[in-house]
Length: 147
Image 1 (cartoon, rainbow, N blue to C red):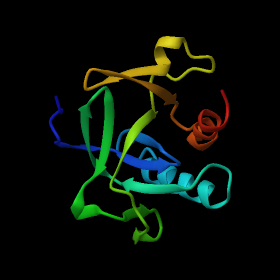
Image 2: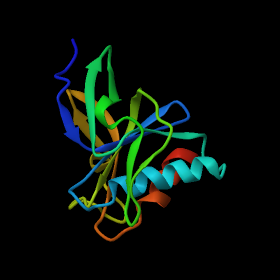
Image 3: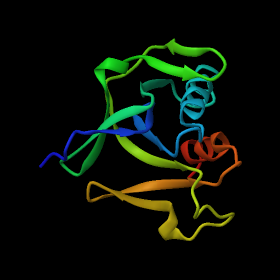
Image 4: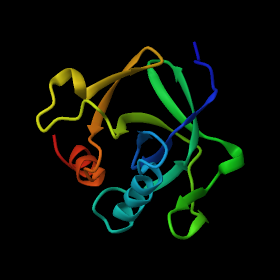
């Protein structure tokens, strides 16, 4: 059964074959992290990274997977603070491998195991809570490159 495809305020990037869903309040750095991941992919630090959506995405749950989709009216557009809206290559969708929660109130130096998971559309998904003022990119790169 598919979930309601209503859009949510989030950004998403496809890294290799894994979707990265980035949530957080307005101004928390969702677009910045999405673009940082694209740049890390171009630099060879991680597999190629492609924007799925910035600012708004749609989520569906089917066959035990959470899939993030870009919204057509924003396809390929990303906000770069100081430059405005820019256009980049984009992917239509990806299965979500991890949820990044920016400005997370429960972020800790050594988070308990339950903080590293979240439930979205009744599916348990790995989660990285990032505290306010802490740079999220190193945490995401560590998730993608370590076991």
